[in-house]
Length: 455
Image 1 (cartoon, rainbow, N blue to C red):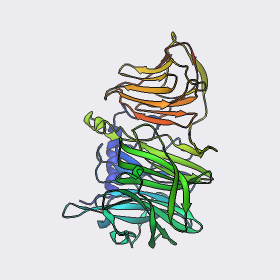
Image 2: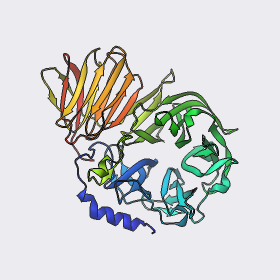
Image 3: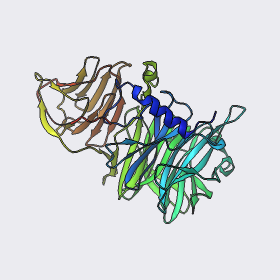
Image 4: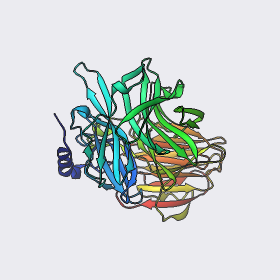
């Protein structure tokens, strides 16, 4: 059955109001109804930031993908737009998969992967172009697909060929793509074009390192503070899926990227498939947050939505080569101090900044009737423990006492940003919100911001 834009928009209009708010975030973007995953096509166009995303409006589980769409003027308040792309052509009939966007001659151009299930059960993936002059309504290029299995280098898998990320360098367009070889080792491919429609293979940009896993999805070739960088989300590595940032040297003549350092973007397992974009010289990034251990929790609890975006963040690399991530937050904070005998009520969506961190042996607890999150400081580690409706989660960040950190708490997500560069994102499912803040020893001075508007 062919799925159309009109069908998707009608279904959303008729059913979005029935979605339960029980676990839905207030300060993080989630789709109006249905399943959401990878952010796609992040771009600033016609006076607005655009967030496209992998989307199944019809169910809270992954299925035949569309591109959902939202816009914002500040990266904080998002407005739902009509569905941008549907799997309505033969070359994308089994899913409009991930891709990216770029602005060319006052036109928004997106490139995405078309997913096709063959009669024998195998998959073929191809790359396609769609354009828009208003940022809302898209026309798929009559010459699609623009890249197929015939354009792959020798030895590349014809089934793993996806997630195009566009960039412009010295007047030429380039795209990086996720791939694997016939030995099921990850590699990243590079193609170039002068018009975004006709492409030629340049090189295997990166291969032969264990961090690429069996496939490094959603590759992103970018520049941060003048330094060449490559972000990728690898499957088939120890611990499941890892998202890394490689800093190094891009040789545009040979089409090779040489990593100097490789570091995780996030210490949590619930962070995946981030995409970045540049706006006026600032590099922004938005990730997908999902529960790695409980992907089916929401649909199994009669929820009609699943998946949310992480906080938009600014990327910066300091003089020591350490990645710094600063969340984009609204203004309007108040200062408070939490004491052991004076628990403090907090809103469902809250930002807590501990400018002096925690002392060794001290802990900070966010609690509710059906769950709690504890941050406990030792002499070397900040340990985060989450107790809720899914198995207890725990992770530790190498953080010394009195190191500043910031917590972004929402109804079902927690993000911790530290002054030393470590970041951890967690999904949790507490049946009722965490609305009380307390500490174990003495006072913890905090700056607090409460989110009151629904997103």
